Length: 96
Image (cartoon, rainbow, N blue to C red; front, side, top):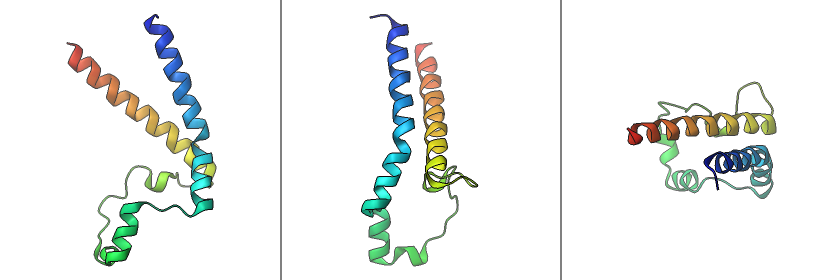
């Protein structure tokens, strides 16, 4: 198996996951899923004393100005690209 074939298949798989990301977001809202750490913070009262110093690049997997599914799709694409850039950069550093 050539390296180009492997990269193409991996890129197609990542693209497929990015495309279905809004579906996962929708299903999470339908079943009422919440992050376990957020649930624990609410139960212990830690959210009352919390200070949000950095809301993150794409808080709650959304992009301002876009509806839920479109925002999720965009944030999935941006997150995937950023992760690939960091991974390829680390690979290049380790290669040399």
